[in-house]
Image 1: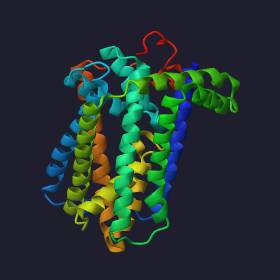
Image 2: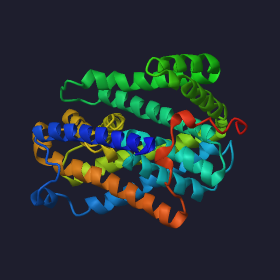
Image 3: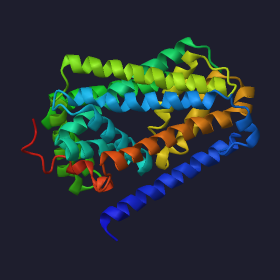
Image 4: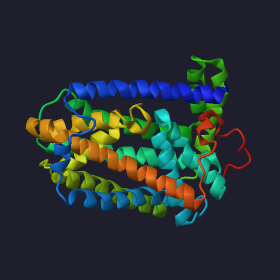
Length: 348
């Protein structure tokens, strides 16, 4: 068995074990992973069509906004950006332990010729800015909205924002003090294996060169505007679906649920975020709605919320593969340490 295949199987086995642990916890909390027919009968007739339209808008905005980070590096047609993004999000969903995060840089290199290290820098900027926006919104919601007490309350109020402020500081450090950061990262990796020192140091240098191609102010403002619309649409979908399932959730409450979900799916879990997504949704509902609503309505709400996200991500990703000519072949074999290995002459 090849080393790459063994690595994928190990990640898959670990992710399935994590998913099983989350499912065990959820069932012990009284959540039905597959709701009953009576649960489905409680959904308002308008809820599913409205949620479907919301998901279309959500996925388009999510995919399109990357164009504004790529534009200062190299203009890429909107259609190509959207197709590559949709396939990249499919990879994040189906590959275990978030190893699909490298898919978009790999695919944009293939289809637009942008060096992978540069593209990876734009993805890092996107993730950190996303984290700052949603964690700030979560912190505000958890401070101003009346909440039911819970064991994770103060951690959720402060930890996500602190985490992404730290991540932003690390990106600045990588950009401003590249060689020092590369040595430190290589030294830290060397604690686990001496063979990792040079690849990790090289990867840090590659990401730094990607970050050096930061978008100009106008492009960054456009990215932030579309990202704001994307997150507002996401929260709107949660709000409408909850109301359609008979859960009395306000819009600010939905923003809080969205923020907790965003934090929850960062945790390693099964393919498709299975387990961590449902657990985060249950924890979130516990803060904003009554115990009775959680006991009687949470199973159907969480099921439809998750199934809708997965169905649209898979369907749109497969359509992009079939009609857009974007292939995932070889993406799972890509490693972060190889980002800069063959691009030394391509850095901008």
